[in-house]
Amino acid sequence: MRGTDPEDHAPTDPENHDGTEPERGGRSDSESRGRSDPEQGGRSVPQDRGRTEPERGGRSVPENHDGTEPERGGRSDPEHRDRSEAEPGGRSALEVRDPSASEQRGRSVSGGHPVPTAPGRHSRTDPADRPSAEAEGHGPVRYGPALPGDGLPVPAGLSAVLAAAAGRAAEQPVGGAPALREAACGYWERRGLPTRLGRVAAAPGAPALLVALTAALGGDVLVPRPCAAWWAPYARLLGRPVFHVPTPAESGGVPDPYALLETVRRVRDEGGDPRLLVLSVADDPTATVAPPELLHATAEAAAGEGLHLVSDETWRDTLHSPHDTVLLSPAEMLPGQVTVVTDLAGALLPPSWPAAVARFPADATGRDLHARVLDVLTALGARVAEPVAAAAGHALGEPADVVERRAAAVRLHASVAAAAHAAVVAAGAFARPPQAGRHLYVDLGPLRAGLAAHGVGDAQELEDLLTTRLGMPAPGGHRFGDDLGALRVRLATGPLLGDTDEERTECLTSPSPLELPHVQRALMSLRSVFDDLRDDAQRRESPR
Image 1 (cartoon, one colour):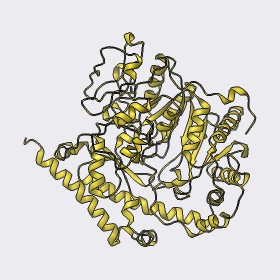
Image 2 (spheres, rainbow, N blue to C red; image 1 turned 30 degrees about the horizontal axis):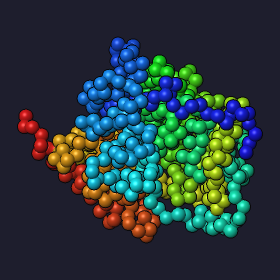
Image 3 (tube, rainbow, N blue to C red; image 1 turned 45 degrees about the vertical axis):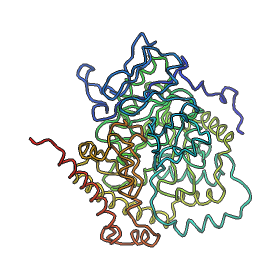
Image 4 (cartoon, rainbow, N blue to C red; image 1 turned 135 degrees about the vertical axis):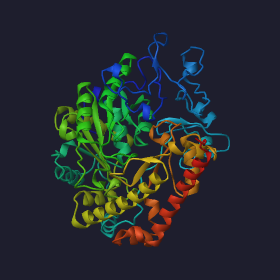
């Protein structure tokens, strides 16, 4: 373990200063994404934070979907903080920390919000929701859907590297061996981020790095709404309050700067201690890339408030139009206040080989943070497996075969994502054009009338319906911190590539993958499902 001062080992107390858990409810529809209010001097004000009332000790009071306050008899004692009663709209007003209470109610806390589970119905994409898992005593933290995989066979070159290292008995040191960290330094230097060897740490996946960073930095955590499904649960695992900040309409992953400032002010006014902002320039789940001017404004706002930024850059190498899309890292703007995290499952390794790397600031602050993160990783025993480390080092070196395979996979998923986007938009749904990744984020709000005929009134019910009809996971927006009442889902492109390795490989090598019969069938099925929902909505519309 790295030698550090004793104070480096002790993150701050995981609860708020008054011992209560902050409100996490709120809306995230188009009104809550940082709309401009003339009375606020043109600043975007987050609409999804509860009302602050002096008689409640200045704490935020969560609201129902209709804007009214849940009936609590005006009390805010621990009894009411732990009860998490279901609202008429189906979502609990407050999240609980008591595992037994969560088990009794059978709710999933995934993507930042509790998901009420009706008797006998459990999420298809969250195994921890099943009764058997509850009987095993799982706590209230539930993990959301995994990263969208590429659905492609593992490249032969990577398999050979991993197989050659399979006989090594020695384990990787915590934080990665020098060879792996040197490969990471070269990877970042080729992207305009000079990196010192002593400021790099590797771990078995980005979640391990984020939980270590959260523990090392302490304080409250700020994330965009929506955000990657795995960000918030790891903070809550540590007992850290998580506050969602609205994003602007044009992109996800990076909060609106004025909404960020307002959120920080409110949290501090209520006794909170915001220290960490997690963002993503190439985003999951929205598949958008934040404009440089937005990123700059948000980074400056965060720096002015003394926040440390963690930039999740897992998807930066999956731009659909790399020559037309400008992607910048906040580490280029604020090198002393940004830690970059990259999960290699985004573009370099299969998700079954967990490996991720983190780049810390080069100054003394970065040195101390790096040491504290290594302490946490040591306590967790979070080492990259030796064969996986060998494959990760090879991939980070970006030899020609790795670069060519990555480029081919990106082109394939870009074309399929564009076709899927055209299908859902033609059916009347909303979706921003995907710019990166292997997914798209769809808002079916315009089809709400037709969905109601199928008993769908929230994101969980929409997830259940589409998962069944499409025959592939369609995680609801509530798993990404979006409002439960908003009818949003993330659709991945990997399942549209075929059912066998032969079909998926054919997609990768074909000059026209969209013309392959199995891809056409998959896209036709997608169009059919969404067209049926559009037709249902049109039949139920009131005549004008």
